[in-house]
Amino acid sequence: MRFRTTPLFAIAVTSALMGLASLHCGAGAFGPTSADAGGPLSADTGANDLSADAGADIERGTPTALEAGTADVAPPPLSPNVIESNLLVLANASSLPAFRLCPASASGPTLSNSPRRPMPEVLMPGSSLEGVPERGAVAVLPDARFLPGANSVVVLWIDEVTKNHPGLATGSCSALACVGGPGCLDDGTGADRHVTVVKVTDWAFDKKGVVVLEGASKASATFTTRTTAQSFNAKAGTLDVQLFDEVKSGARVSFQAPDGGSTSITSRATLEYDGFGGAFVAGTHRETLLEVHANSAPRRPIVDYYATPGLFALFLLGTPGDLRFVAVPTHQ
Image 1 (cartoon, rainbow, N blue to C red):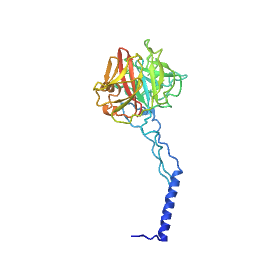
Image 2: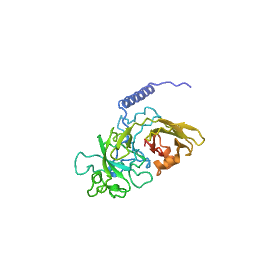
Image 3: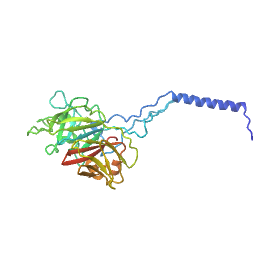
Image 4: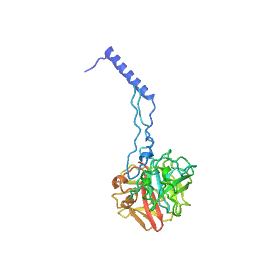
């Protein structure tokens, strides 16, 4: 059967094509909008820090309402397999107790005049207290408003003397970061100070990455930074790790699979695992994935924990005779 084109049909087709072209040009005139992660939440609420234990999602920016002739489109990622780190990891590689941080004041009756609570507001693994544990690490969202660039920071030391101080649960930096006054974390008795000022060699508390406390004493303690790499781990059953050997004993670090296979880890490694019987090994020290999870994030289900996409910061902490592996996701 043959169809005959009438003048009215040709006019209708032409009008439809012109309408489509107009829509195409209209959408192309508007660039894609940003799909950022949203600003950090207030630290006063205790919600600005995301621990590896919590496993909370980062709230994405809400798309704007579509208006006539506009489209709100997020730009595509550089690569579908690249996962950028977006957390600040705080690690304690010293021989010192657990700690929390406050901005240092230039002057005033206390070492910090900040009305906000100390950082991090994250429960330590296996503890009801917030902080960075002894020989441990936690991850938080970086917050440029809390610790602006400087060369020192106030450290609140948490040990057997101070762990029951009521101010640790709700107190502000200005109330806690002092010695000998009412409400101060350090009551001024004894020779050991529980509030001190520690130097920072390369400021990085306001951006993603790794900040490590080093030192054998409170007087010699310093914070130094480490740089995390991009992750290309987008496959279930793999673990992308970056090793931070803070012991520096020279011991060979490797991952030992249950079947006896071994993968050396010098800096970066993508490890395949099936179950949690595989183990990280440093010299004669060996810890299974189950044990590393207990060191790092025991409140979070182990399956979800290791399924976190992106890079894990794998720390070797302690002393040559007393080692510990801790693994913290750098992406949330």
